[in-house]
Length: 445
Figure: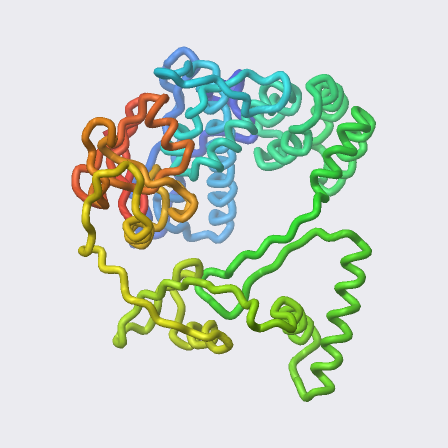
């Protein structure tokens, strides 16, 4: 019998060890088709067509449960192959892509990696339908793995270590000098595939400390820097997640204070559990003894008497009961509704506060592809530049962050507004996107 060979993969030296073409399997008569026969054809390094690979999960449900597991393993192999190929393509793109227009080259990877065009992450994010920050991080991962971890990269390319593990290693080493990373990669790059993830993490931590103790100390300090973050839970106004890193002495004092206050609440008749009373105690600390100093919060609520849900800026959709809970302990003052039709153009470049509020309510997120920056943290950008006669009116404005604005000004990105509330982006490499207040639509060209 002829020896089975692995199909060549474009841009890679070999295919993943785990990947082999699988013949389609018969399915039960009358089984529902999930996808009309789907075939994947791999292309060789020199452009020749490889063997077709049947995605058997698309042919229906097999009779034998054992075949479910076999097909599940095949689908997992395809998914892992796709992850590998995605990262390899990003690394290839970094090497091939040059700056556009007045675009600068900027470092995204760690020390020793090549600089990349400043707005390349916008192109990658658009192609992968990722937020710009996530695309930037993915480019950084590809750079670090290929240029700083050659042994680990080789293991990943051949499918011997999952992409997510390789990425985690690269991120742990991102702030280390290139010489330290090469030393670490030489010592453990070929060993990691055979270790459990818990054991691999312990080994990596030891090698980082040995390779560059000072850098390891800096990284440890960075990871444990003091911070306090609040994350409102989408869909509920009743709870907000709080995460913080405090000095140990302060944390111990806070713990004791909350325990004491929780006990006093229980003595006063509070029958809730200890965790709930501690959380309430923290709220009491926040409100303090000076009610007059309570800050003013502007809250926009979109609802009608017939609607079952209200939409609240910063909280998302809320049931009316949740909205009642949010406002229970507040002094509420209603203000006049902002009418989007009530807008008068101005001659000045500066956007009046009332017009800015209109725009934020109409378009709550930056009008760049797959953006996540909220409009309150963005600038109001003239679609037709003011210097070229573009009016300062909501129909010619949209919220843009500084990166998207620079891409438009210096990177060859074109932005038009075919009709109010619809923004059309054309990237230098030929991608097209439509942005509305419902999100991003990628146009297939």
